[in-house]
Length: 180
Image 1 (tube, one colour):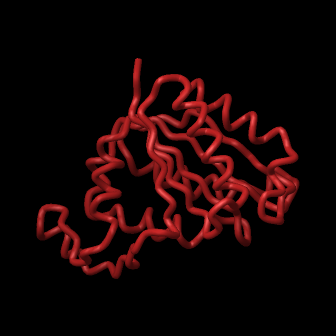
Image 2 (image 1 turned 60 degrees about the vertical axis):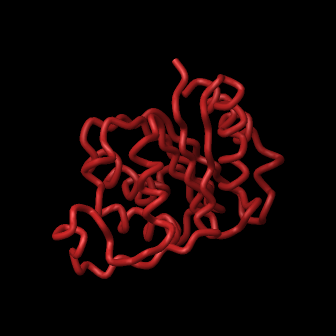
């Protein structure tokens, strides 16, 4: 079955380690016949949520007119959403957290999705990635109805941009994309 796959790269570095894993996931999903799109958050204008709840009084319309309106629409129409982030101080990037916070306007309409998570970190201990994964789960599993966590790629032990290229994690991302 052909799926609509939306990959959201929360890396601030184009071609950074988590962004490269997104590209490999995309390659695998595309080769499997899925419709795939990647959003690089650092290229988007997304204002921080200010908690005004204008959206609650205006049928999900946010007070800010920025790129988030189009991103939420893509999230709602996707079958599969991939959330990717480098791990900074044991949690997700600011870019990714800002995106998640801004879904408040219409998060109840992002339901029934399959979720994959991609994280990268200089740290080599999987157990130390718990907080980052819990950020994703808090959003995708705890807040979105009927969502399913389908897989996680832990790109550990990488610090410098592009360092992921010499690891088996690229193949893992490709394989997971192919099977999504």
